[in-house]
Image (cartoon, rainbow, N blue to C red; front, side, top):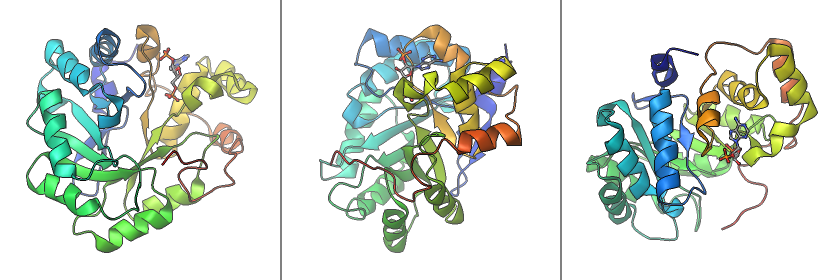
Length: 275
Ligand code: A2P
């Protein structure tokens, strides 16, 4: 097992100077209550120092309770939540998030998806940052073009774009567009919500390294330069998913995994939109 300080200590510096742990626990689709609290608690106990929630998930209260109960100092943990864009006012909505989370400030606030267009909510996101409600601001599910549109109107440009990303959803042109703009990419659904774990190519690489399929998929994201946000509600999987910093994938394995891409290297963030 890795020294736990390594797990939370591996950080990426964002364009605004904030340091973000490259591994975070995602809690999408985890209901508010004991299951969510336990998952967050197990992650913090395992050394994670980054939790990714959202207003739309309805579980910010559980994240906050787990954080307090863990005894881990607030300043050691990077907390992200997301503006629910069916609402109108990012400032009013983050005030609700801060109350539910039980904190004075979060670390990252991102527009969950570009509903109603990519730019209208950005002034409100900047206002949330100016009020010190969040250290960093960013977006999620934005294509390269939508990102350009935000940057064109921004005083503070987005520090992050959180997108569905894995060897099967490589989105190479989107990644390159983000890198060119100094926008960090966060990978959500890095395991394909579990679907990619049974892929034979991933399994073969994992077996050759004495690792699990999950670890191979997550390590690929790290070596592609992204921050990675696996979701699990099982303690042993949460622990397993953190053991990423004591092995590397060879250039050959990376190229084999790259070839699994089914997006044709797209610069868009979603093939199917729900908004
Ligand atoms: P569970 O939450 O029941 O542990 P993604 O991060 O791509 O959204 O994938 C999450 C899915 O993958 C969840 O269904 C989760 O199940 C499962 N999962 C997460 N980590 C592992 C792992 N190490 N081994 C097997 N399944 C995993």
